[in-house]
Length: 292
Picture 1 (tube, rainbow, N blue to C red):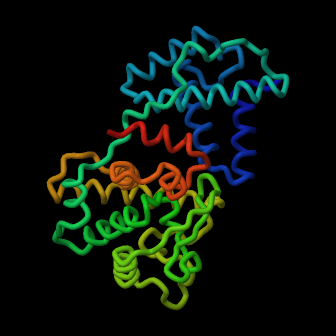
Picture 2 (cartoon, helix red, strand yellow):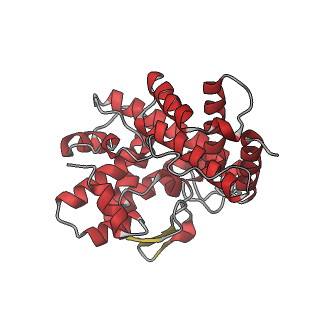
């Protein structure tokens, strides 16, 4: 009989084979965390009990984990346990995860004020390196809050006749954005700065900036993306400090700020939903409810 740990390792392998590297990483992290909580290297299915889960949740909180991190670990454990039930490896226990937090705390979503946003995107930071980071942030905002993962894999073939059309990496939905003059100018500046389009480096518009030469669906490409994302977030924080901003900046700050600006200017939720690449308007309504 497979233990919870060995079954999880199988699920991780299947996820990686299917190109779901983010899911595989979350499974690994959840298993490692729970085993650390139990104080032993292997986890059995009976170890996933109501009392253990409640104690585990408190254990995570005592270590300063955010509500969303706690929820992520518990949701991964729930997903794995339910898969074990489906495979006949574990008994079905009604409401096993009902007493622990598996929701999503939207209060952590932050949008910049108009003044802070203007400072971030237009005040000169003084160095070429930070100007490149600033231009990248500006482009993300000007492309209707384009997520970093899609920005990092933007290709010249996605641009045609003054329109950007791309498929969201996360949801697969198609997003079409008309390229207005500011976005075209920022894009041109980035392409010039990074020397994109040179011989031997065809394809991705921002290839040199993020070093994402492989498909996001490959293991190598996913690792490249993770490195690029960490580097970009670190540069954004550096940029914010240099410009005197007190807000904690990340790649999603620009997405949240664009959504807030669109909401505050009275844009229809249907349009915001389409440009954010959400699969449903309900998702957009929940998303927007996080912002004042």
